[in-house]
Figure: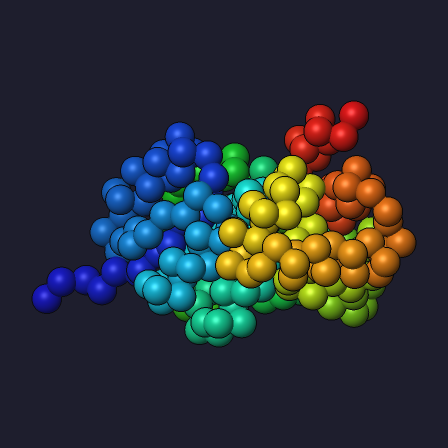
Length: 227
């Protein structure tokens, strides 16, 4: 009788990193990588199609960041477990993904054995954190008894669609490109853009980009576009 394998979706935008993780996980008898996503949007689409038991998700994903991708996956597939594997350990990233239901958080310098152990643990419905993240979570709990509080940098709460629009604008996508990516009309994108600027009291694209960076919607690597 063959061992049942954990169906896993791997979401990582860097090809070399993604291929390396896949190669390591293929050495595990009880884990099967059933899909790979290069963007947050692709991760959501593949999750809906493949129904993986576990998603290993990077936070810094293009087109749709890992936080919002996680939110959308868990809304569509409540039984799927999301494990964050990121280079970022800042409080706002940890707090956001934990508040929306991610089951674990590892830093990319973790060993392959630790990653495999984390996948098995979250698949069983238990949480798993690397030591430095555990310390940060303890710190956050001491500072705020409400684990669902919105980080200070995101005083205004955005809808999932608004987060998508902000990220695409911050990544330099024109209205036409954003409309094509989201499958909506250019006019709808323009309306969202105008509403966002009014809601956030921001009046230009550079301001929206700075907001996206400060709110953790995109990585600071995009700062080069607004300098």
